[in-house]
Length: 564
View 1 (cartoon, helix red, strand yellow):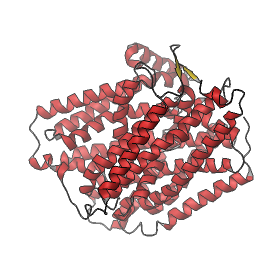
View 2 (view 1 turned 90 degrees about the vertical axis):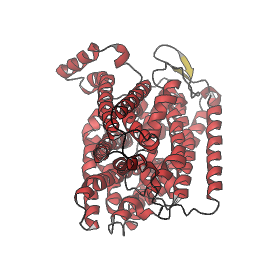
View 3 (view 1 turned 30 degrees about the vertical axis):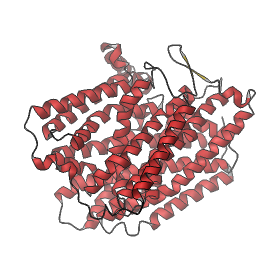
View 4 (view 1 turned 180 degrees about the horizontal axis):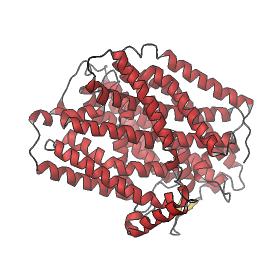
């Protein structure tokens, strides 16, 4: 489908990009003065900024392209991941953020040193940097480049990488200059554009569908035909326990583990809460973001299903369905707004990963070895780290391209790295008997197992897609695949995540109880309370948090009922 970008669309996109960069640079003026200002925005963030930034960070082109593409294939059930993330974000605000805020942390691995040992801190920090680069940054850049290719009619692999570099450099400009403050302020703007763009897609998709031969009524009869021949409504969130992609039991076990790990123990997400003025703002911001994530079901999942209705009988690749929908249904001007929204989603996710990785390396590695240098040096090191992480993310893109569903790649990858990290944080916060031996054993054994199973479950895709034209590699990979039993190589990643988590729990308990208990100060680390003004809550804080929590729960139940 040929597409010609109109002048008004180009103007909208250019104005948005310039405005974002200018605003980001404007708020970067004080960022280079000290590490607290650069990495935590001076701990001055209020809840609307935190909530908008959390939402904008989480809703990237992985969701628009990947989750929207999955909804195109299997239906609204693809958004179950979104709703699990909303639940996890609520837990962030009510359980995790208050604990971490009272410790006055810069990074989450700092807590791991206080609770376990410096080795655990170094492991988690380094591991987080690598995984954010190859799972988060690469996925966002690749999905964004797919959109750029389609919109500008670029077909070559070279053009893909040019698109990736353009997207990465644009987001890096203001992030390098201003740190977290610039990131959060620009995220607030990008959040507004995201919501407007998503709403525009929903409205115009419904209008277009209403003019189809069967009208809107025909849309409600869309069916997913599973690989085994079973038929399900594309408007139902729920699938049987043995569904290939979204089995209900796998979602509420492995899916919930992934969601809590990603939203409650990930530096790129928690960094906003660590920069909050107080616990009230961190909690309210998280709850605000959880509400927005429920709304995202209608901005991402519903248009994805409508795309399946509009493109019936057409050979549209799932990860290109959302872009194809934009090209087909939107008028000039509105197209520019929606493309600006997609670019906003890319930039907000890229800047978050860069800011988080910068904090992790500078605070958890560089600062430990260079304690008596000028604080401006820390900021410089943070900026260099951002550049290195950006390069790692770009170089990992060929691996991502081997997956037929981008969002499935992301969920599958995270499913095999989340259990050991989640287990260590969970036991560190809530189980005093856990010690550094148990934590290290869990991280080493759990990570090794996760990498092994991820390799086995993705090896066939690599053989038939990435190395399709390289006979030696293709045959080698298929030989390895065929050597192992089908139940292992074909295991659903959500169930794999749950079994992996049980293995990690067993490792933590076994090694912790085979070795001496941790010292009392280690056991009490989770209760440390360096208040420093964090408990000076605003009037009616408790009431407002309860109201926001109730609003979220009502909205969540309403969505489950509507798409049951």
